[in-house]
Image 1 (tube, rainbow, N blue to C red):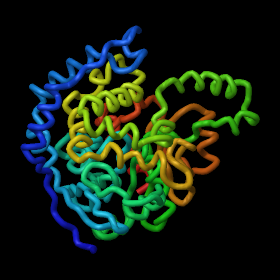
Image 2 (cartoon, one colour; image 1 turned 180 degrees about the vertical axis):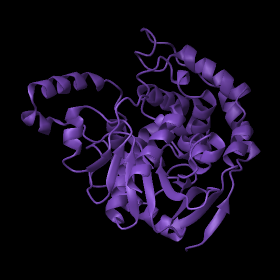
Image 3 (tube, rainbow, N blue to C red; image 1 turned 30 degrees about the vertical axis):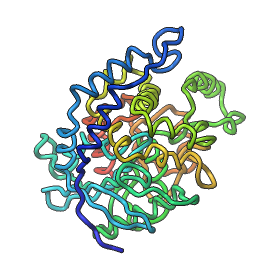
Length: 377
């Protein structure tokens, strides 16, 4: 049960052929009235994406790139879990677990692994380097999906602390954004004697309606402005109510899957006109392909419907057992609220970017991770 088994991605050629055939025979919807993306993913945009996906995108090249990273599987809490384990060439490297988000996968961190593990090769100070561990969350990519109700974020966190112990790591850092931002504080709570610090991309200190009565006039004005942000389609509501219904289309139609994922990535990049302006198209398609080939769009929705407190019902939980760093920083209001439940050791100002910062601005993400762990190690 404790065995760690090597793993390589090797999608059968028949699956690639099937994907291309389905793309060629897409039945296109009529374009609804409206401008740009105001009614959802435009038909013209999706047609152009499908043409590139089916005729130019090279999955085998992307597969080979991913296979450059050592990958493994091991059983954790009864489930076979896939993970990357990339050791640094530098002595005394700090172990670091990276927890990916939704609707993402381990490819979220593919552009940061190099500078984190081998800073010397990227012109960074080699005095701080990391042994990087990137698990696929259960139900995502090549990790086995939960077979019954009862999977929770604390349970995943305990699985990941077990993984780090199994790899022989006694002291390590944890980092994550989106879904990962919920997991890493729970890892600290599960193993405070082993976790050096928890770095998240954002989400701490976000006010709720319960905080309004205690706000100053300036803070109330900020709260009012925040309400204008909540304009995207709520995947939390959809996947809490009927994940199986939507999964039929995502599983049978690659364009249905691509439309959904690109819609969400568009929601997650409000500072850009197009997602591809800030993220490489091939990286986005690699993520989509992983969902398609592993048939995990349905199983990855468990955080929205399972457990006593599904993701989306609250912001990431605070913890005071280890120091916390936040890439996004935030306003004075957000820091005040974050400090109620967290020992904030790193709260930068001026960091830019959208939601999935590791995919969009890997150099800045690496720099912020290094700044935080330099301060707390």
